[in-house]
Image 1 (cartoon, one colour):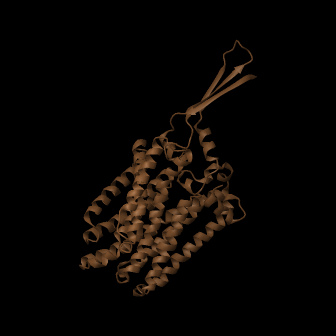
Image 2 (cartoon, rainbow, N blue to C red):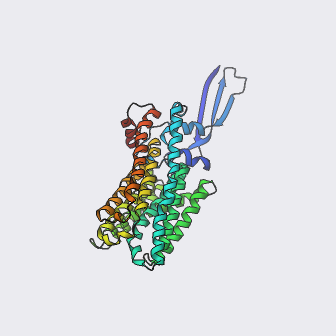
Image 3 (tube, rainbow, N blue to C red):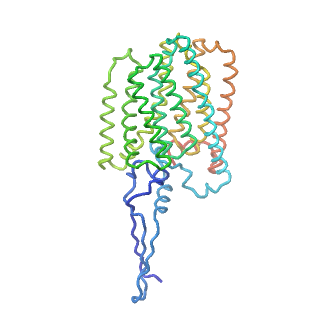
Length: 417
């Protein structure tokens, strides 16, 4: 019989391969310092015998404690572990496993429309370039597409941390296809050459860093610098692009971006120096994901504003690109709901409604869609698929989690468990 039990534990450093799956992405700032092993000393009644000692890896205990704790949905969507990983009972449920697999297949199927999404626009741009009609490419606002590109790069980093491989492929396809459009715009002189060069450097660096990190080939320090870069870059660019969209109706100024840049740099430095509270560090850690989502959400707003200002140039847009974007984002809604990722759910839903239906409504308002008699027939199929997958998500998700109402799933999505 043991007379006394002495326990000590702590963590000096978490293995790099596990940082991205179970711990807070911002260098474990939200966790107290813990050692890698947990030692127990058993004091025997017989004083002549040596104490018994036992050591084992306490990382599992740490992970279980971290995952099983309540999750605040909105801001902590940046935490790279979905809600369903914390319940052994749910993970062993057959309906849960089936819905997990099905939502992953939906997200994987979204690669098809996203792969094809930019092709109509790329083909249309190529035809206009070959015909010498560079003016038509002015209908594609490079500033609005730049917000989408930055959003795709930041979301690529976000989903790389979460190891959602289906969505990693989606974001990569988005980056590459949008870069091809930028190349066409640069050839047509619809995008200034210096901005195109800077864009090329950022795209190349972002793709290399994300994929080397996904395969655990990147040093953790370099990755943290990249996270700081996208945090500062996203927070600086977002208000500036929002402001610039409405120029010349408002004064042309770089003040919004400059102020946001100073705020972002200050926040990152204070977080790295440990000058912020735990809640403040979580806030800074979630900035990059949220600015990426907002940049992505701003893209259709910029496009519709351009449509309103230049209705004659709207013929340079491809309606089928809008349809494919609507379909691709709609297929990811069930997975976002299942993983309780409010950031992902909000971005996908917004893109489905505004980038898809919103821009198609603009085409109808300006009678441009009448140029293609098959558009109305083609619109119905993607719409039916979106309604089917969304309705299935609201039906199957509560069953998978053992709830009686879809309102419980939506409540957990927004407010956490």
